[in-house]
Image (tube, rainbow, N blue to C red; front, side):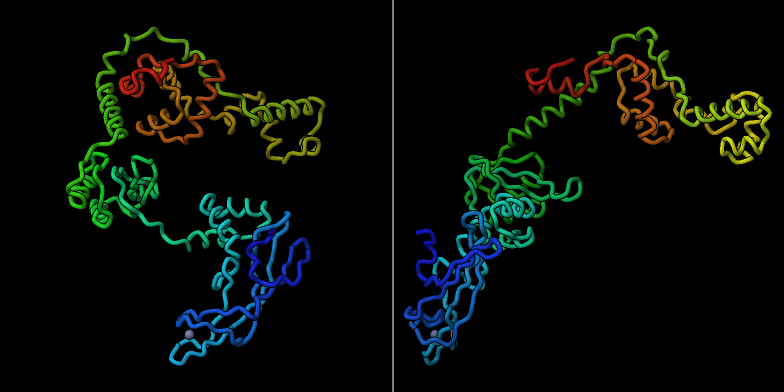
Length: 406
Ligand SMILES: [Zn+2]
């Protein structure tokens, strides 16, 4: 049967209208139904009304079922309910606008993809639904029953990084997240363990809050540090030790390098170029005997600008005093850049922070452009003279397998 969920109703009509398959159906008059309160069977009809149900698409067309259902009397004295609406098993849900078939599909898509992505996929599947409606269907699902696993993993979980942390609880054997707590305090963890007994082993970081929470909530469970945090602690300790020892690995001072020589000269910007061209044009016209007004008209310049160019015998007079003659903000610190470059530091963000620490406040963009110009002018690629603390700690932690130097 193509529509098994319509088996219990009488299908009166099926037609395609504006690309939608409309099915008109009605429930059978002879069916006897129990009152939801007193469970007494009734078939005395109070009235009929139309329900409109969205169903899963068929043949690439959305399906709408126009279903006529009965409202029945309950004739039992003492029953608080006088009338009740009939539901068709497998086809209608109380107050629902979707058939159970479509609702299951919407729940599955919503759980897998959530709002926007789910709504986009459903559009392809010929189900028109907004992301908000899809999310409300997911939120209406009952909370899954959480049972405490035998081996429980616990760690902090960033609800908003650096601002708000919760607690994530994981079944270590299946690697599945089983619950999220709104805060990361020992009290919340202890309360959860009390409400969900059964943990035999608790894997945690080495913070006191979870240790304390586990002690109070599951005093008989064995506590251990998890592998990730052991590796992380080892890495941090190795990095700290490497930082202390690093000065001893630095080789003696090198000969002054060629980096300083390739520091960029001040570039001639578009303004300088334009002034140079204007100065030449003004003086060429002056030689031909053209006056102030003629030059203004010819070059479309205002009198003040033309006078300035006429007075300057050479372009240098304009450039030295004009705005384009300014010195780059960082040119005064070129030696510092050259030294740091030789030491292996070419990161604009690091150099920016170092300048700020010295009280030199320039934008990150300015530093980035200066470093970019150094590269363009052929400064040799910097190479660290000694391995970094991070490199050394990586070798210690990972045995040099995962990290290659150079
Ligand atoms: Zn009743």
